[in-house]
Image (cartoon, rainbow, N blue to C red; front, top):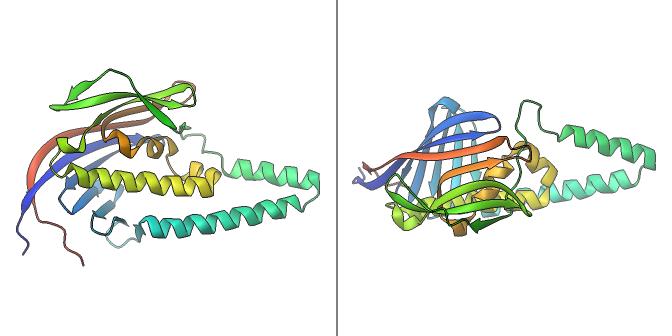
Length: 238
């Protein structure tokens, strides 16, 4: 049996896509384990392979994501998107216009889902705070020149094994960028673009994020609490 080691445990309260969920994270030297009982989801990030595996339910499917697998998926999406565009260009103009309109309707967010605004840059706000005993740097989150949110980010050094969590968040952000570049309409439909675009590696670990759309409605609310040191068995490859 593996000898338990000091790890960091925390609770993530997340509002995205109009839903609120709670996730428990255990951060170790070589892995991050994510437990989301209400959503029936578990995840394991393996630092050695820079791979995130997400399992839905006890007997549900598993999704394994790393930069190679997502690059392959992005490439397929790009080919399919290019093929579709060429097929539309070959149609008579009135038919192509109708087909594009139908595509826009297909990729439109459900009416009961909050429409997010992607974050393309962040500027230090000078509004720094101490959250849960950890000093955080405040940022204004922007889309172009419009401020679409605020965030408070902690240095990875502030948490035991914080660099492992930072590496996982960097992977998630990079996966989003790869898919976004390949098929922006599809990604904007199925993924919380506002949240994923705000997990920018250079900013650190977000302890508090609030993102709004152009109407001022909150689309993403990310709050970390319950940060404490625990003993946990290190991750072992299966």
